[in-house]
Amino acid sequence: MKNNQEILNEFGEILISQVFDNQYIFIKNSIKNLSKTEEYKNLFSDMSAIQKNEIKNYTKEILRGTLFDFLNVFEENEEFKIIYEEDNRQVNLVKLSDMLKSELIIEGGWIDRFSKENRFLLIKCLSPTDASFSRVNMRLSCPEISLHKRI
Image (cartoon, rainbow, N blue to C red; front, side, top):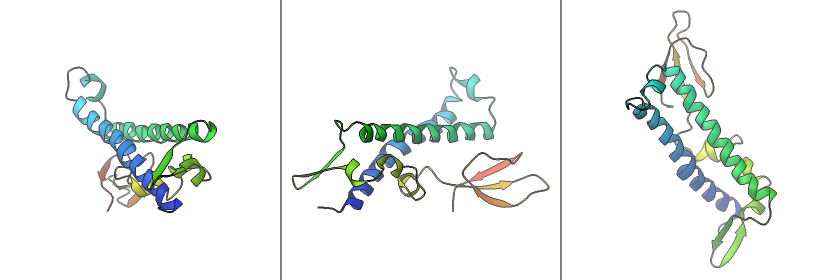
């Protein structure tokens, strides 16, 4: 049977890639695609790139909070369990971690390690006074920006 860390990592990778990333990709694509539809054109058409990026960041926070609260249900209510089974042996994932819900959001946690969508952005400030580059994962303070994928 796999060791405890391998089990937690496998669960975390599945949870992040199949839930967090899938839902984040959905909202990312929806903002772009829905802005072209008649029903939502007024919602997205007048939004700047910065505003659309803020919606994406807000969505990430909602997804993080939702998964955190979901896992908290299993920590706070022992009658519900997340079971890993291999070779007819069962392990309760809540018992493998001091705080299963925190495995998502801690530095170097599941989202950091397994998400292909939760990447830091390389931001280039285009204002004449600041042409520097910086890594950020929070709200931007540049008046005009160019977004690039993490290298």
